[in-house]
Image (cartoon, rainbow, N blue to C red; front, side, top):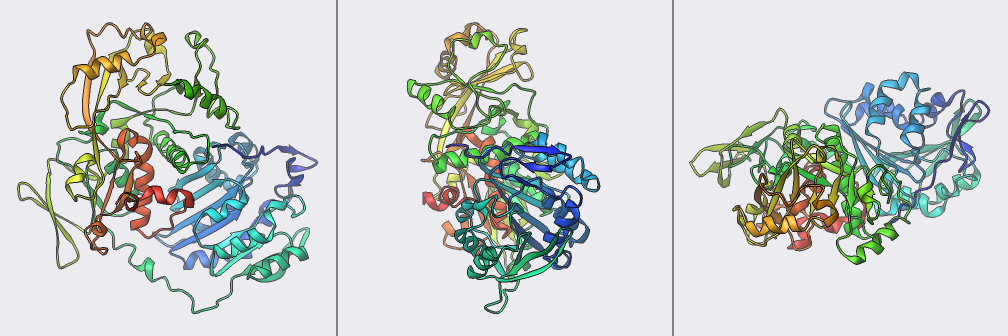
Amino acid sequence: MKNNLKKSQLSISSAKGVFSELYQDIYFDKENGINESKHVYLNSNNLEKKFKDANEYLIAELGFGTGLNFLLSWDLWNNCKNKNSSLTYISFENAPLSIVELKKIHIHFKNLSSLSKMLLKKMPQAIQNTHRVYLELGNVNLILIYDNFSSLKNFNFFADTWFLDAFSPKKNTDAWNKELFEEVYNHTKIGGSLSTYTVAGYIRRGISESGFKVSKIKGIGNKKEILFAFKEYEQIPLTNELSKDKNNVGPVAVIGAGISGASLIYALQKRNIECYLIDKSSTIASGASGNKVALQIPKLTLDDSPYGLLSLEAFCFSRKLAFDLGATPISEGVILLPSRDREIKKFNLLLKNNWPKTFIDNKIANFNFLEKIQYLYMKTSGLVENIKFINNLIKNVKFIKNFNVNKVINCDNGLKKIIDNKGNELLAKSVIWANGYEMSDLHEKIPIIPISGQVTYIPETFETSKIKLNFSYGHFLSQSVNGYHQLGASFNKFISNDFNNQDQIDNIESIPDFLKNIFKANDQTNFQSRTSVRASTKDRVPFYGSLGKVNGNNSDQTYVLGGMGAWGFVYAPYFAELLIKSINKEPIIINKKLERLLTLDRLL
């Protein structure tokens, strides 16, 4: 995996305004930029009327730039939207501006300042990836695809409106070619439209030849004319029948109060879908999710392996969510140590792949004990406090504890009757099983591999409490949280929650020699431990899907989410979001390379 993004090379001056040295062009007119953007993109596409008429709307854009088009669209959407409607805004950008640069520009967007502040808090790192930003105000999903425009071919979606690149075609030739025009056409709904500043003849012809009906319309300011195009109705317009039954989902019963179940609840609640949480235990996170902390770190690969891309995308999504919900302790990041000789070579190659130093580096100051050690430093990786995270994910939801589900019965009225082992009953429209390794009891085809794992808790000392670093080396050793360092975990392919002395010994022996004395690992007087059973899969990647399909009933609204293994706090929030999108018939904007890895189908 390489980070092939270009440097933005922004300059701001009284002479040039907001200028890209990379493309030798302005981002927008310094005197009339906001009004120009409104006219060229919002007004030309008649978005005010379209927003008022829409239950859901999808805008796609080539070139996120300063984010001005997005802010203006978001502002208009908030003023025009229908209740419970949603906006999806997809933007491709191969030279993203940094948050510092965006702040310098947004200070001039005075009427958009409140939206700008909300956006800037959620903007991702400038790494090549698909980044998902949810903005509660207006129910807006911003999907930033930091990649070349040609990567459009890797995604399946249909836009209602396209905003084409604002740079001159002569300055940014990658945005103006036949192949890209055809992809834009293929990613546009019938009746959908596009607009841009340029009216160059060869651009009009290229867009027309791709299938659009093209015209020049009145411009604004120095632009006397601009380009507008739409995809003609070649057949009877598609109705919105699918969206009519989108609300036919809840109430949803989520079974399992670990990280998977909690992530599902969060994804449902942000869509205002009625839901509740069930667990056979008297507390949340009684199983594998109940350790004190978990490590959030991506598993980077040297090539563009779907496994590496998936891990990176899931990490970016879940790490940001943990930050937003206040579940990450103050930390200086993660030191990734090679667990075998070949990883030293991998580390050296990764460092040459143009990742930002805040993402991976081989240097960190002020830690003398690392001076002669080879490592990767991952500043933005780190810990999540498990119980705090789960509690914040399920805030304000009904939690039904001590309810051990025995069976689920379909009723004639379209509801499901959920019955526990004591005969107590609950009703739901949809059911999602997220109960870890016990999910294998649902059907012989559910591909769960139970893995028993034991963690060790080492009491902090005055010295170690000051070390805000985490160490990953096959096992991992955490910084101090609430008085203890977490160490582990063991991996045993059987089901057991019992303490295992050999696992305790193996955990301690796994600590690299240079850390053992620092963390007083030889004095086991006050060590504690916790054992739980994780649910893994044969390819160590989770899954979601329809249990009804496994049972031969595609219309049954029963689903599964599982197979998180030791990576639940990286994968679960991300996979839960995709499953709820699928259930709620929302567009799932994801790289085609990842599709095969997501669902249960690959394992059946």
